[in-house]
Amino acid sequence: MLRLQDNQGRTFPYLRLSVTDLCNFRCNYCLPDGCEEHHHKESLTVDEIRRLVTAFARLGVEKVRITGGEPTLRHEFNSIVTTIKQIPGIQTVAMTTNGYKMDQRIESWLEAGVDAINVSVDSLDARGFETITGHNRLQETLSGIDKGFELGMTGFKVNAVLMRGHNADQLPDFLNWIKEQPITLRFIELMQTGDNQDFFNQHHLEGSTVRDQLLESGWVRVARHKSAGPAQEYFHPDYRGRIGLITPYSPDFCEDCNRLRVNSLGKLQLCLFGDQGYDLRHLLQNDEQQPELISRIQNFLQLKQDKHFLQNGYTGGTATLAQIGG
Image 1 (tube, rainbow, N blue to C red):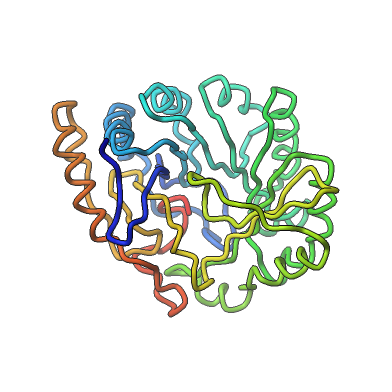
Image 2: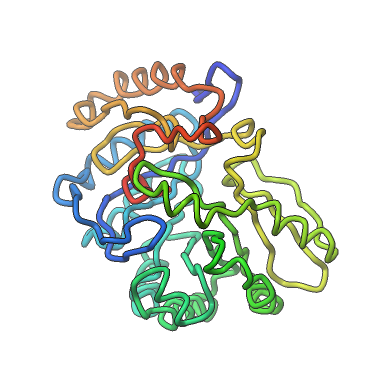
């Protein structure tokens, strides 16, 4: 069987696929001035997405996460989900969303075939949420999560970018929220990008500050599944929910890398903070190109480095996380 393996021996069962670089939020850590530049109308078509994911599935990819920007701004979003879901070998179709109109739309997402949802909730305080995101939409996001549970979802992952001066003091509120709900709350270290240097310097906080509080309170780290994301997860017997920490500045962060990224224009990104993407779109125009597409993906993978260089202040070609979905 074909599979994706790099020169470090890492295998890649997980693809993060951006379907648009357009976002309608103005998060202070990503797009504080809004999405002024985007290529939404030039995004991969549904047929191009089908051919792309088919090739990755033949190479052993089992899980696809649909990202953006905000992926649900694609009017074909549900068709994209259904198309990917039907590709042989794909076991899980996940999505990441900012929660926009989630309370109204989640039922259609699940009907289309979404298996797992990551949603951003950077603060449980309505005023704090609006300060961070530029939108007074906390309640519709929380209502969307509640509706998901009513519709039979067994768990959500909720992302919160950890930031000094915004939500670093809200751990007790978050813990109280997940005590009786099967939510995996993931604190993500604020990452430096090409245009947020000053913000990063002011608000970055190491994830170890949360980890230490958890360990002191009886939380225990759990083993990581092969197709899971980069979070280190912790559980506590008194809580239904879990806590995950994504700490890209830790020295061993890249050792277990298991995911590749393709942006909305069809460029393979070997690392979120790599210098460039490798164009695949010209090989997505008909089904007969599959052998060449598969070969090209395998060859490009051999260029993947063993680590990123964020700790040195090097952010590669990533100006904002909306470019490729984080």
